[in-house]
Length: 352
Image 1 (tube, rainbow, N blue to C red):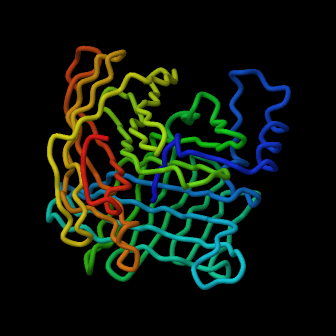
Image 2 (image 1 turned 30 degrees about the vertical axis):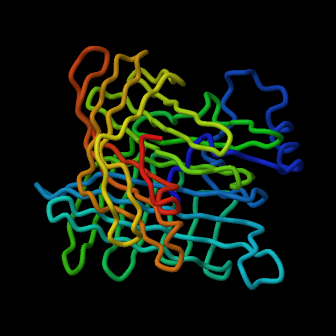
C-alpha cells in the first residue's frame, strides 16, 4: 500500500511521538486544525511512516486515463538479513488506459541515498518520482518507469479535508496526522508506451504521517469519491484482527466536513488475479443513510492489481472507478479510486 491508507490504520506505539502530538495540540481549541499549510506539506523526519499519495483522472480528447503516484518513507525498518534498522523508501506508480484496458505499474524500493526529502517545504524526491511546490495551489508531480511516465501541475480548488475533523487522530498511546486535497485541477503530460498525451483532469492527494504498528491489520477497502454535485468524500471499511470499522469523511460543496459512521459497503462481484491468485471484490454498492446515498461503484478496468512479484502476498488492488447513484434523493455520477488490501495474503474476497 499503499496509497491513501486509511485513517483507521491501527496505530501507534511510540511514547515520544505521542508526547510530540500532545505538545503540538496544547492550547488549541477542539475545532482548530492541527495540520498547517504550507509547512505540513513537507516531510516530518521524526515519525516512522509517511507518504504522499496522489490519484487522478485525466483525459486527452476522448481518451481517458487513471493514474497513481505514491512516495513512501519508512523509518526504523529491519529487512530480512540486516543486522540493524534502516530507513527505506518506496514508489508506487501506475497508469490505467481505460479505452484499451491496459494497466501499467511499477513498485520500487530505495535506500536513503536515492531519496531527498525536504522538512521545510514540499520538495520530496525518491528515485524517479517527485512532488514539489510552494503551496497547495502550485504543485508539480512527476514519475516515470520504462513503460510510462507522468508530469502534471496540480492546483487545489478548495480547502483541505482535515481527516478526523482536525487532521489528527489519536490511537492508543500514539497518533497520526492526515489531510486530503480532494479537488486538484490537473494539467500536463502522460506517456503510455511510445505515445505521449497532453492531458487535463482532476486529482486527489492524501498526505499522512505518524508512528504505528501494522501487526493488528487484516486489510481494508478505501474509496475516494469526486461527485458531480461538488461533494467529495473518502469511504472506508477497515478490518483489524480485533475491530471492524466502516465510516466516511465527507466534504460538502459548501466546505462543511462530516464524519459518518453508518456506512455499508457490499461487493456485487469478484475478480481473480492471474498474477497473485487473489480473489478481490469487483464492483460495490455503498449506502450512507444520513446523506440518502445509494451508489454503485464499478472499476473501469478489472485488472488494476499492484503486483509485487517478490512479495505476492503484499500485492494490492488500486484502481480507477466510475460512480452512479443517488445523493440526498437526487441522481448523481462521479469519479472514484478504490484501494483493496489484505486479499492477496488471504486468497479470499468479501464485502469486509
